[in-house]
Length: 352
Image (tube, rainbow, N blue to C red):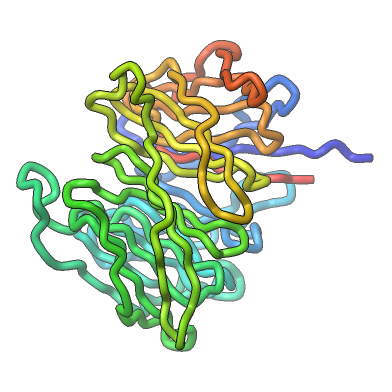
C-alpha cells in the first residue's frame, strides 16, 4: 500500500523575499515541514485550490495568478489576470470551478472572473463595490471585503465585510457570472466578521468575528428560491477564564480535513483555539485554547491526520509546529520554528 504523501503551500508577503509561495514536503509522522521549492510571485496574500484540486490560484499585486498543480505538487504557471482594482486579500472558486471570486479589503470590492477549462483565469464578469459607513472611524469607516465563499449548493456567494459588520449574500448567475444581492446577514456593531466557512453538508455556516472574538454559527437552507440563515450559536475564540484574551483579535478559521474539528486563531494573546463540531446540530464545543509561540497567528491548520498543527505567525516571521493531543486537550511544541517573511496562508495538498 502506498503511503499517503503531502506537500504544503505557504503564501507570504514579499518585502524581503521575491518568492511569495513556498512549497514544503510534509513529514506527517513527525509533524514537520521541509522546504522543497520556491515560486516567484509578489505579495501572495491568499491562495486557494480549485475544487477539483488541479489548479491553485493566488492573489498578487497585479491581480491573480493561476497555476497548474503537477503530479509531484510543483506549481506550473498558467496565466495572470487583472482584477481592475487594488490588491485583493482573499479568493475562492465556485464549486464547479467555473468562476473565481476575489475579495478586496482595501477598496471594498468583489471581483468575479471566469475560469476556463484549462484552469486559466479569463475575463472579469462582474465588479461590485460595497458601500456605506461603518461605526469605528479609526478603522471600520468604510467597506472591507475580507472573505468571499459560495454556499455548498453553489447558488449564493457570501461576502464577509468586516468594515460594515455584515455578510452580503448574492445569487450567482452561472451563465453570465453576474451577482445579484438577495440577503444580508448582520453582525453586531464593531464585531468585524472576518472569515466564513461552510460544513461539508452545507447546512451550517460559521463566521469568525475579529474584534469581538467569537464565532457565530448559522443554519442555512433555501426556501422559495431564496437563502435563509438562522443563528444558533455564539462561542468565544479566546480563553475568558483568566482575562488573558484582552486585546485579542480573531484571525483564522479552518476545518480539519475530516471536518470533525474547527480551528481559529487569535492575535494579541497569540493563541489557537480548537473546537469539536457536532455533525448533526452544527454546534461547536471548545477542546483547547493555547499559545502558539509566535506573534499574530494569521493562519493555522491541523495536519491532515489531526496529530500535528502549524501556526503561521505573521509578525514574528515564523512557522511554529505542535503535536496535538486532542484527548488530553493539549498542544506541545514540536521542534524549532521555521523562518518565513510575513506568512499569510497555508494549504495542504495530497500528492499520492
